Amino acid sequence: MSWTLEQFVQALRLLGSLDADVYRAVAVSLGVASASTVLATAGGLPLGLALGVARFRGKRLVATALHALMAVPTVLIGLVLYAVLSRQGLLGGWRLLYTPSAIVLGQCVLALPLVTALAHAATEGLDPRVRRTARTLGAGRWRTARTMLSEGRRGYLAAVVAGFGRVFGEVGISMMLGGNIRAYTRTVTTAIALETAKGEVALGIALGIVLMVVALGMNLMFLQLHGSGDRT
Amino acid sequence: MTATATPPATAKEPAIEVRGLTKAYAGRRVLEVERFDLPRGTITAVVGPNGSGKTTLLSVLALLEPPTAGEIVLLGRTVGGRNASALRRHVVLVHEDPWMFAASALANVTYGLTARGVGRREARRRAEAVLDAVGLSEAAGRPARRLSAGQRMRVALARALAVEPEVLLLDEPLAGLDAARAALIERALAGLPRQGGSVVLATHRLAAAYRLADRCVGLVAGRLTEMPLDNHFAGTVVERAGEPAMQIAPGCAVHLATDLRGPAHVVIDPRTVILSRRPVPSSARNTFFGRVAALAVQGDGVRVTVDVGVPVVALVTERSLRQMGLAPGQRVAVIFKTLSVAVYGGRGT
Image (cartoon, rainbow over all chains, first blue to last red; front, side, top):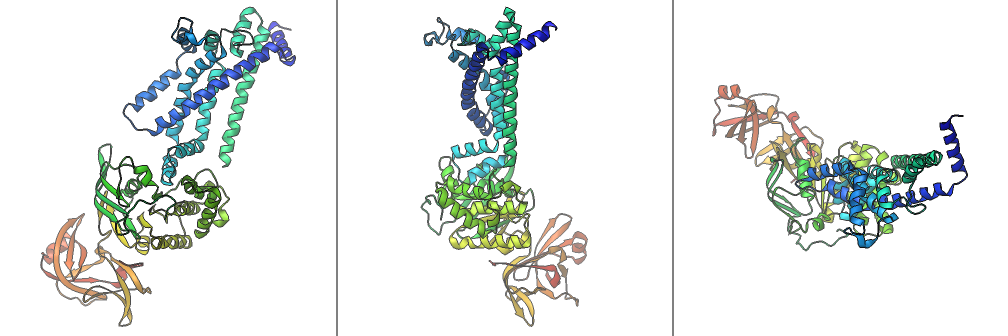
């Protein structure tokens, strides 16, 4: 049996034997990615919606800036926040560095422009009659927004799923702000980097399989929800 | 008659008053309305071809789009930035191709009611009653988007009627409806003024406009004209010497070819009107005498207005005009056949 195949077989054994390190890393990853996605969604959906509806000078500039922010490397976000959250930094007193909260904060910064930009695109792509109909039937600002979110749920859901996918698979922020502390801030991606560097390739592959399964699961869930939109 | 508080206004005030309104997109003026009043409890039809600005006018009147300039007074209140959203609740616009929310027909109809704070049970009861009135009670539970175009229009109308707006704005409300369904909608609309509601309906279908409206105005290139067409007369069709006729001016009764009796509108196509310097024996049943009041170039021809007690317009070619030597003040005969007179039953004006 070749070395590569051996590593894969061992990786499957690790997954099957419910290796605690693997599942702890998965739990941390899911926890911080979910929290940061929820926060980015809470900020990004209303921002994208407002940006799509509002008419003001410089709107195109704001949209361009958002798209540019989507391309900022995770290491750069990690570096800037590291400088802010370090003991000597601006928010050093909060003692967030090397905690899951620091990862959540960093991932939120990463996902917010993405969710906002995609929500903006979804709003622009929404039939203008949705808003006009809601308003002429007497809906106030909040009811109109709710109606738009509901009618354009496919686009908005895609924004949320893309945000989750982005933060779940990132490594730079988790590494720099979390510190890769075992069973505390070690995520799937940082564990893969560490274990592979240590020569524990099988464990790295096991974690990689988990990463793939979660990503596929998210996409399947999205397709399911997408389909339910068709039935209405 | 709405679920929300009605602004204090007297019944004598028009439901909508528009003064000096303009609407421009990217510097291009698409609407220019010097003055427009919608009396309370009446139906006004805005008749114009596609692209004349009907939809823009309705959007501005529905307070969905701010005018570029001018003033709108709705139910006695001048519309400004702050009160626009509150006043918007008294007006409902039904689009030509209405959007159906991704829900059942019933849920679509309850939308406006729940948005106004009506309880779910009461909203459902009222929505079912309105759906029944537009002949859609059997489709209440079906997804609105799966209904036919005609059914969707009726759901949209039911959705608007359910909130009992003071002002109802309709953009081509009879589009896609067969005769029976259109009659159903017309009955529902005709009842609105009796309840104090005022209606503006935009259409390019003249027959529907005359049937439904108390008043018809034209909209051409964004400008309102008091008469949507030349030679439009309102009156009563009566039996005169054994044949139907409508008096359009003292001593001036137009013979008609119709079975209809009672209030009606008649329109004489100016292209079919013949002018003659002296009476001509012919098969045409209508001959009136009058004097040329005005001459104006219109397209490839000349528009000749003859005063026969009321102005009657004839379109003639420039060559005919030259050969006849027509000039203002000259006496001419106006001749047209009964078959060139279109008759529309309606409420009259």
